[in-house]
Length: 232
Image 1 (cartoon, rainbow, N blue to C red):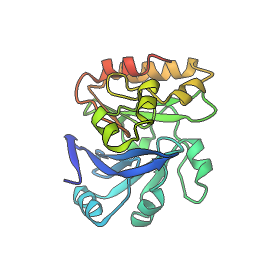
Image 2: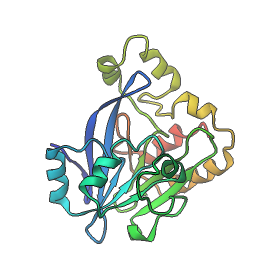
Image 3: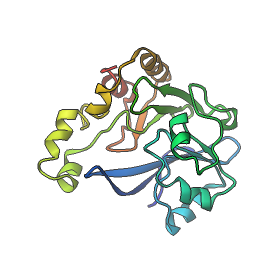
């Protein structure tokens, strides 16, 4: 199954592993059908024929979303396949991908184009990376890229080398913790604004949490995020 239903009008698509500085990372996209029946595609994964057919069966693609400047690899092929779709991302993504015609940068408030479907918060304060986090209100689902990584022991054993696995545990990017990578946390010099963003997401009371990398959380999402973001 190329698309896994999460709830009404929201699906997950799993992509291939990518190499991130020698560490294999899974890829995952989230697709939401907006009230006007257009599709909102978050962190697009590699687009193949089967996935395109599955997506097209849901409706017209209206929005392609990069949550941070790392999650941009497949925007070019999705934009080529869906040239009428609007491209969105924070200013850091837009600066990195000057070859693509983005809309205005994403910040703390979701664009009117998304018809009130999301609570949105801009986590910033690190010179290395910022990220836009979303909560799909109708399904109570938080959607985040690298602010929480949640690898299972089984995934690590199958895909990471023996010397790499202790790093995952040390960083806390494993089940039971779900932290952001250590080097990103250490670079977060200004946490005041990020704590406000955390409160905004927690106040939305998400029941589920879908992250780009690792085991997504099917229940108890608010408690999970309270723990995963407690370093802020």
